[in-house]
Image (tube, rainbow over all chains, first blue to last red; front, top):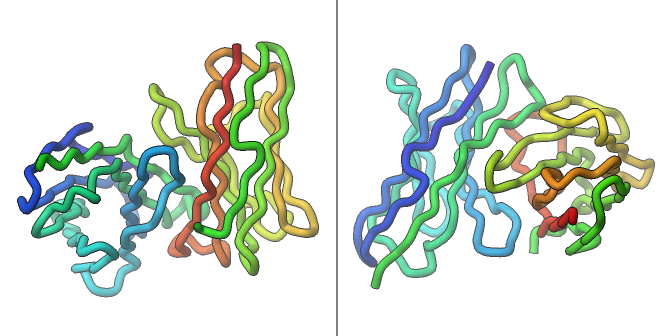
Length: 114
Length: 114
C-alpha cells in the first residue's frame, strides 16, 4: 500500500527565509510524487511532479523538490519565502499497484511573517 | 482558472437527504476524479472514471455513487446524508489515465448537512 506523511501541520517562516516542507512516502514500487498548493477557498493547483526523470524537480513560483529514494522523501523547498506563498501544501503519491489511485498527505499550512 | 467547473458551489441540506454534485472536466480531459476534503479526514480520494468507465475506488462509502456520462461530465450522488458527510467535495480531471498525469482541480462544492 502507498501512503504519504507530511511532518508538521503548520510551518511558520519569515519573509525572505528558506521554506522547507517535509514529505515522506511509502511505496513498494517507484512512485509518482506531486506537490499541490491550495489557497483559501480554492481548489488545488499543481506545483511540481516527479515521474522518474530528474531527481531534482523545479516547479512554479520558485519551488523545487528533490526525490531521495534512500530516504523515501520528497521535500519541498523555496530559497526565499514571499507573503503570497502563504497557503496549504499537499504532497501526493500515485502509481505502482494502485495505478489509478492518488494518496494525499494531511497537508502543511505555511504562514509567512512580514 | 483550471478549466474544471463544479456546481453548485454551496449546498445545505438535512440529514437523510440525497444530493447530486456535478463536475465538468477540462476540454479534452477524459479522466475525472472525486475527492472529499474534511477537517478530520483530510483530502480523501473517492473514485476515478476514465471515458465513462470506473477505474479506481478509494474511500468511497456505499451511500455514495458516481458516474461519468458520454459528454464526459460526472456526477457524484450522496444519499442518506449524515452530519459527518459535511465537507468540501472536489472534482479533478486529467488527460489520460496514467498515474503521472497532472490533475486539474475544480473550485469544489461545499456541502453542509444540518
